[in-house]
Amino acid sequence: MSVLIKGKELSEKIVENIAQEVKNYEKKPGLTVIIVGDNPASRVYVNKKKTTAEKAGFNSAVIELPEDVSQQELETHIDVLNKEDTVDGILVQLPLPKHISTYDILERIKPEKDVDGFHPINVGRLVIGLKPYAVSCTPFGIIKLLEENNIEIEGKHAVVIGRSNIVGKPVASLLLNRNATVTVCHSKTASLRRICMQADILVAAVGIAKFVKADWVKPGAVVIDVGINRTEEGKLVGDVDFEEVSKKAGYITPVPGGVGPMTIAMLLANTLELFKLHNNL
Ligand code: NAD
Figure 1 (cartoon, rainbow, N blue to C red):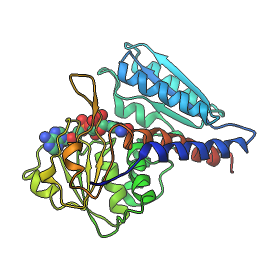
Figure 2: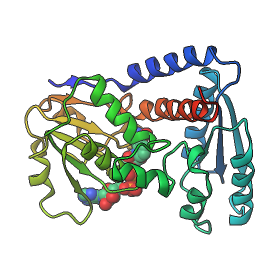
Figure 3: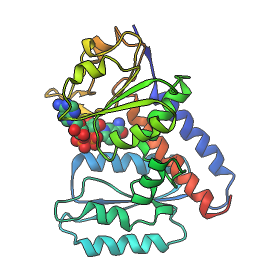
Figure 4: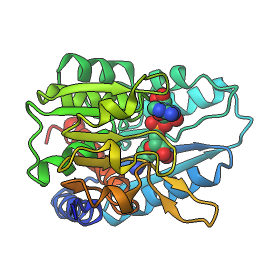
């Protein structure tokens, strides 16, 4: 049976430490989230972000915009927030409606306030190995989980399944920057199982329930499950067949309680960093 990598506990510790630090400051870190439309999953995520930020003593605000908001109107909101002193981090909840250009919106956010690390400047800095203003929260949380569990990255073969801009690509860059040998797999990858079998660290960010099976996993491997999928019965499951894979892996993240809670903890950590940057602390 593998060792459980407990993201819930670590994230609670991180949020608690942040809350303690924030108490020392007269001014409070400010996080504003913009949500467009009525996507129920997005609403759940945004509420969780707001309540956790408040728990840590942040000034937290949510701007709710209708599904048919224009590109220009959304950009105007960002322009105002870019100039607002009390706002350290701006997050636009994705996905956005089809008529909005997501790339233009992400690029509109000032890189120094881009708490999600999605601005091309922050992505570029990450890829060339310079410190970004903020690192994309889920990949950053994955690295924290590995580091806090004393899992060595350097020299290991890390296989990432998924090449999204939100998870797959940034986590691959972070692993590469820490001297792992990284293979990125995706929907057109041939011999996926054979490649996964070579992984010392396997990151699954696919979005297909229980996609990774036990016979894809090298005995003792570290398996990081990023997936959040709902079964027909409404149960939350990851991209990894946890029941079978946990008998074979050395370490594994559960779903829920693994990578998920780390995402919000890292969002707060990023906001705090930007707050310190803006206030020369
Ligand atoms: P995405 O849909 O943008 O990307 C999925 C990736 O999987 C793509 O790159 C695609 O090429 C690859 N893929 C699809 N089918 C495949 C196949 N058959 N074989 C190999 N690769 C295949 O998704 P995403 O935004 O990267 O999210 C992935 C999963 O992670 C989802 O379940 C999502 O809900 C979850 N997620 C969790 C968190 C968190 O906080 N825990 C954050 C972001 C995303």
